[in-house]
Length: 327
View: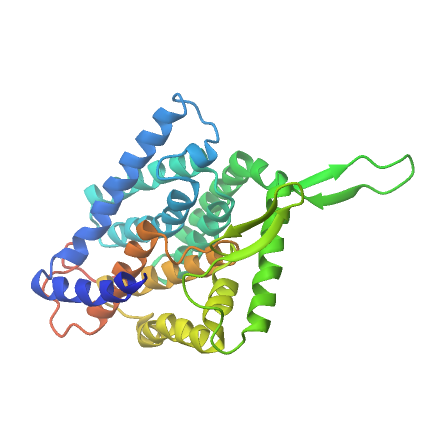
């Protein structure tokens, strides 16, 4: 069922060989997509800044995961074009970034609300050496203000993860997980128990988990454990898990030596690949997202573009304005 995920990087590599200008166009296409998504979610919310949750366009998980990938990429594209003096492109990516933040506020996915600021700070860290000390201080102040606004707008979502029980006078406040998060923890425990029962090969891909989530409803069949790594362990065992890790770590091992590249395009794609890989890790800790098509399409396209760029012998299409970053 995941064969398309394995074929996508190879297909993307083939397309890039035929169209060397395509990787440079991808950030613009994603930026346009973010602007459209923001307009749709804003309209769904009655043109108000409210949390739509699962009603958000593409669904709360899909759009939240995509925002966790594309917001850092839009920020990196903005910084890259700013450094090379492409003003029109800088303005475009600023608009795309603003639209993405609007969609993030409307979508209010907890995973995205954590991943977006962390990965955005990663991009600022990556590009820090290309800015003067004064510019770095300005960026730190702006980033702090954006993160503060981010917490004010979306912070309320994290208070929904717990339920407070009113204690008797003089007793400490008792805090417990909400019903939805308690179910998630139950699934994690069941997934780990399934792995311990079938540690070598797991219980099989495509298999479900029969367990009791609500006592009044009896046992139900669930398709995954709401955690990417536990799910892989439970269904494929230690052998499948090692293969899963190799699938993601092998490309990163090839890209890591190029993280300090002086070529703007190579630098951009390597850090974009690092960002989407970390987003997969962060999101995968609380959800089974490996099969989410919109997210995985972006993930493997970015990985393929980064690998293709680092192995490209001739730079036929510079990233922007045919300039290099200032040292």
